[in-house]
Length: 117
Image (cartoon, rainbow, N blue to C red; front, side):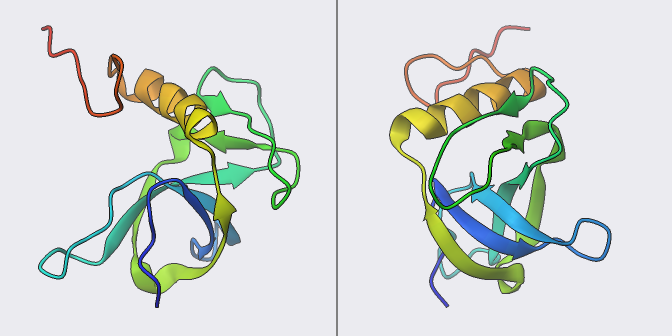
């Protein structure tokens, strides 16, 4: 199986209640010594209009949003197949919604975090 890469959108089995749906990989690739896990943001067509939803338009997804409030970490075995990849600017939109949900303050790069108390 191909290792999921940050910025890729995969079709994922999220279990009985959440069903099979597209999700964006936010985590970095796992090394051989690491657990084979990926942190994802599911894509949904049930838009609620919250500040934690990120809308990006790509040809391989139906109209909808990535819902940062639904972050999930799953084993690679639950990843079914890669659907496509977001551009850097599209990934930045989703990162912004995720940072807002988690209370992170992103500076110029996705790994820079303001650590003020």
